Amino acid sequence: MAMNTMPFQIGERIVHNYYGVGEITGIVERELNHHPIQYYRVESPNAIYYVPLDNAQNDRVRPLSSPTAIQDVINVLQRAPHDMDDDYKVRRNSIKEVRSSSDLVSIARLIRDLHCRRVLSKITDAEARSLDVLEDRLIQEWSASMNLSPDETRQQLNQLLRESVQQANPGD
Image (cartoon, rainbow, N blue to C red):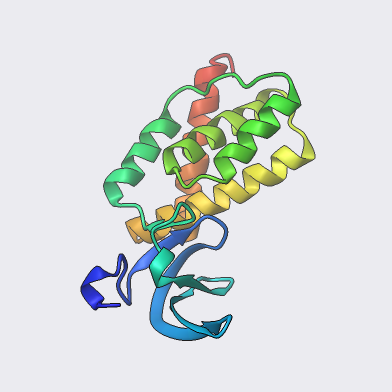
């Protein structure tokens, strides 16, 4: 495959729905069913994974969000949270849908709303685990995009979430 037809370049940072932010460190060729296939080699903090060049533009992999996109996330986090359904099955389906997507604004909205529900009401253990995973995923991408440390980013996120909860419950 010619270099100018590749969706990503070596050295570029990308985001995988499961592995998070990683950097493309090279292109390797491997055999699958006796057919050579070229892959991007991607290194993330917790794994090395491979993305087929001919299938790199799929819904599991995307470019790192721009600082403008991160500002959109911050804007969502600054808004008052929305009430979540009292039926945990409905909430579980919403969480599952957002976790499988790569839409950072939807992830931020769910983090904001789920965090508020945890503070003002109660969430299940599975919801708490999902919230932790989504926060870590957001922090990883926010940090990489804005060139901040994860600790700085987590502090900013926590501050925004505290302020959001206060909008939902101004008496506190």
